[in-house]
Image (cartoon, rainbow, N blue to C red; front, side, top):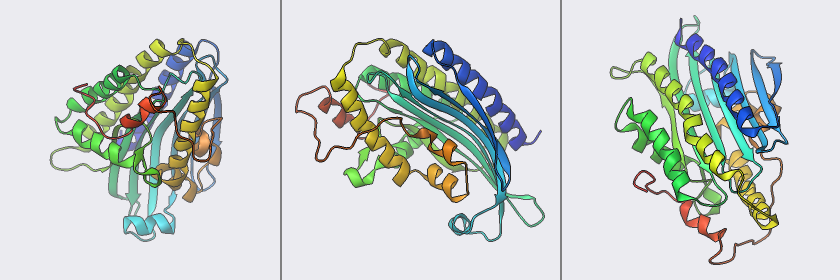
Length: 304
């Protein structure tokens, strides 16, 4: 079985496993299923949950698309008239309770082909990050340690390297370099070489995807029933506005999907159902809301 076929088979199985686990945790809502076809080539399955007891909106999507690389993307990769194939799993969960963080994960595999349809380049990319509205340091420690455990199975350097990538990537640069959340890991253009074979990189992607539930579900379980009110919801909507800004201005995955005539509903699934922009808003000094802000900068979560 090719690496691409193995990865596609894995994300199909993992979509089912993740959705089933989240449905059990929510206890009320279930994921709907939307199978779709891409006119230029490929297909996907979007699974979306909404109006749940725990999750206000969320999606776990898989896709396998192929075709001629758009000119702008071809220029970016330094190729001409190149065909591509991309497959991946992407998820975002927006909780009801503002004391539960939003989470995002995306893992993908990409191939470029020559004129004889032979693979001339291939790489993996992916990552996962946490976006709390109220800071509980122990949650950040747990999330990061789960990702470090996954990375350490392959290289002692990967967690620190990919954490730094994440800290530098998920940033609203137009907001004085404010991070979207408290980070996680992020890697891209991870190619096989003499040290790391394509099969090892495939296993790394699998391990990271499987670590998602271990890193996130315990956090949800201990926060979902905490009391909250209108003040907390208001702040949640303010912070969701920053989430939207990043996704629509900076996120490469969103831009790639839109530029390759991807399915808009699936691409914009990541956006929250409600968000807020208030002119000149700033949280009260000394408040629980203001306590989040110092954590939106790179920090060592492993040492606590």
